[in-house]
Image 1 (cartoon, rainbow, N blue to C red):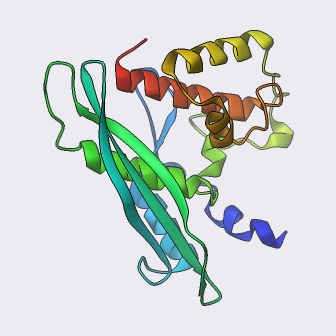
Image 2 (cartoon, rainbow, N blue to C red):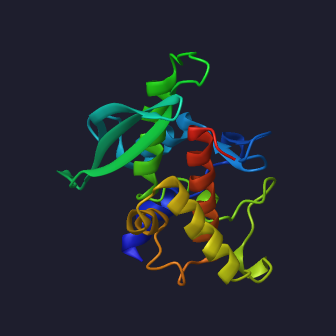
Length: 207
């Protein structure tokens, strides 16, 4: 399918670009080397600036409890057959000031990198990772994998409780994970949602 050409070109990072996260709420999951993202965009669309671009739209910070979280919003576009596409956006965040007053000089840098990765998800960059097709050692084919367990009512209730506790917009959350409703979530969408929720809890120092 022609619409999937770019997605298929960027969806699978090599295992050399993946590192297993050790410790914390994301322990056991895969961290993707940001340089691979830039490399695959260059291979697919050309050098940054002439084949694809990214620009910062907004930078801001918010006090959350006794921490300060910084955020960056970026806009990206790429060129297809000599014509620029419309821009699409991504928002990333990171801790800027820790509870004990320590300020991170990497806060905005990491938020910027996070925002780029969020935007690139819509193009399909590293999609196989986010869709659960990598088990930590190798990629698995859908045809060879075990049947996917449906999301349970209890899991949906727990997710809704967490979103309410965090004050998150449920409609925007569903858009972020690509689900039409909580009842229609796939297992991969649910898992991606859990990662996002855990990350937000980590940012505000809960759980």
